[in-house]
Image 1 (spheres, rainbow, N blue to C red):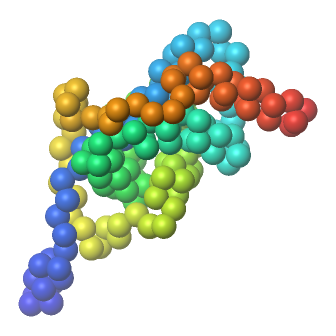
Image 2 (cartoon, rainbow, N blue to C red):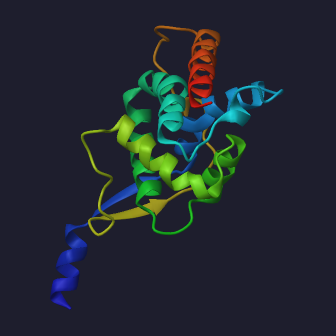
Amino acid sequence: MASRKANEELRVSIDINPHYVCGLLGPLALATEMDSAGDVFNQIDYSNASQRQLVIDFLIRPPFNGLEDATAQQVKASLGYCVGLAHDFPSAVTEKLLLCGITESDARQFLAQLWSSLFSEELPANSNEITYKVKSKPLRANQFAYKRPEGKNWDEQINDFRRQMFDRLLESR
């Protein structure tokens, strides 16, 4: 009994909100929606690591790099929670992944690769060391904050992604 209490005292408690992961996936969901003809995004094979990486590098990493530090930390904690889950993801995350065209069978690999791409030096926190308090509430605009934009605008990013995706599709044929 005493050792159990000591272990509980060593555990860190972290508040997470799965909607931060949804915000991270927002640019991909928007790009998928904008591709109404399905010319590019219906062609993505999310079981293919190189295609997943292309999506991450062109559509998720640039907006992530522009997040305010506090927002990026919330994204990190929430994504780490999702990656570490042994069971189903929170429904908000599953729904956003489906909007992005990522099936449930590819979701775990996608989120794991997303974690390793954004936080390559770190492993997701061990759930034995952390107690998560999940608060699944939609975010207000000021809770998902960006720094002043730098680099390419959204249209330039989408066009670069399309060129890279078409090149990879042509190479695979």
